[in-house]
Image (cartoon, rainbow, N blue to C red; front, side, top):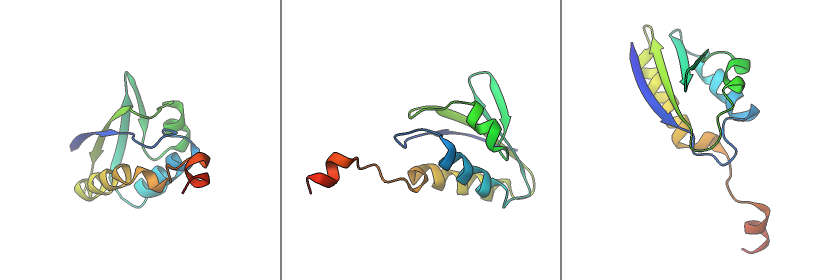
Amino acid sequence: MIECELKIENRLGLHARPASLFVRTTNRFKSKIRVIKDNMEVDGKSIMGLLMLAAPMGTVLKVIADGEDEANLVETLRNLFASKFGENHEGPEAKANP
């Protein structure tokens, strides 16, 4: 079992698109994954569970992976969070003033 904390750094938090990406990522692995915010724990392979966390930017999630490929799963999630789920953080005003 591996536990780690991951901070949500994308501007809009864990909304539908990053939650979907999270679930698609975790479903590639055999290990079980639990995600905890405050006192709420959800299955990391459930998009509805992740959305119920209502996790905005700055939220720190506790992630617990358990299974044969847990180390690879956690490393992949760390990279996903570090990439801010691939979201472009430039707003319309940034594009208007290059």
